[in-house]
Amino acid sequence: MSDKADRLCHAIDNLLFSQPHKILVAEPEVQELLRVAQLRRDTGRRLAAIGASRQKESWQRLEATL
View 1 (cartoon, helix red, strand yellow):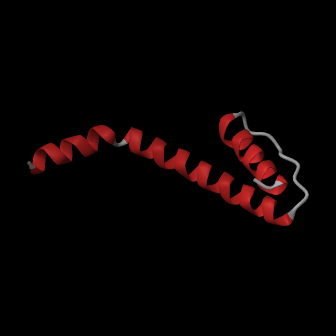
View 2: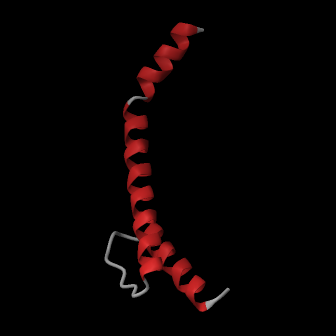
């Protein structure tokens, strides 16, 4: 991998596997990719929370239709 790809990989790993914190990256392309990764992570967490809270209701509806 190129040096740029290695830094991006490391930054994404830090973003996904650690507590939220600021990651200092100078390159605009990498900054934009990290912003997209953060938005996707946050959206995924929100959707998971909604799914977990509505799981019982979903099962009840499914059982009622069967």
